[in-house]
Amino acid sequence: MSGFRMNRALAAGLESVRVVRYAAGEREPFDDRVAVEEPLEIRIAGETFAVTMRTPGHDEELVLGLLLSEGIVRSAADVGGIVHCGKPGELGNVIDVSAAPGAVIDWEPEGAVRRATLTTSACGVCGRRSIDDLLARVRPVEDDARFSQAWVQSLTAQLNPRQQNFAASGGVHAAALWDAAGGAAIVREDVGRHNAVDKVVGRCALDKGLPARGRALVVSGRASFELVQKAIVAQIPLLVSVSAPSSLAVAAARAARLTLVGFAREHRFNVYSGEERLLPTAP
Image (tube, rainbow, N blue to C red; front, top):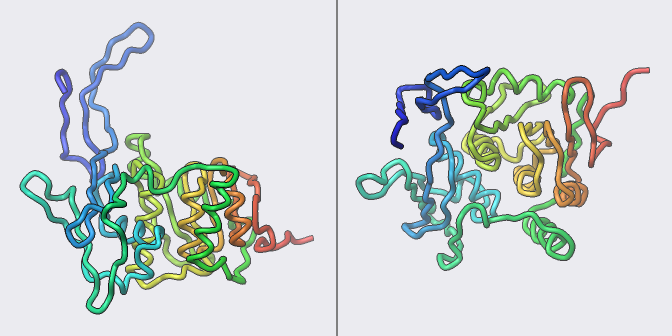
């Protein structure tokens, strides 16, 4: 870190870093803001389950959302506690999950992995197995909700002003859960796209809001299979992305009857799955 100064006295999730800008032949030292990225070790009953790189904050939501999406727990009721722990120097970056009385969190400690390997991009037979495995443990999205095209079109624009850390640093992703009936949105930012979604789903679970029928999950980046998986597990009928979906994301969305929208920008969007949930425009 020689030559750099870092300061944590900023909004949560941001650090100040002393940098030098070169532009038009001029050299200018200034304090820039960067997104915080730190590891979080997730333990279940004291055994390491996973390590994820994340922006600190809303860790309880992140862990619960992850355990739900991976099928480790069925609901928030299976969890008795999610608490930070660890030796001096670890506090804040280690979190332990305990089962609720009478519940069992069933997993194999020897299968502990880093977050990046929990789910991967795939194709062909491996991709088909990924979808089959997902649908074997969760039902397809059964939701009669219908959404106006104008509302879907507005979602990414509504997300933009709520991305405060992105506006300050340009270094985080965002996810939001919107209610078509006008309910308050849940918005979370993180250096990881998957973490932002886990935090949203985890918050919804803590609020006893799952299954999340009649709602839309909006993400600031591309729509991968992992994000589609999380929407399906949470029974969110509509996933809207500002960017492109992957081939496996499209296949999974179609298999699970999820409405998947990509390239939602300004006055247009592409529908890759579940167009029947969009209300027709007035003649």
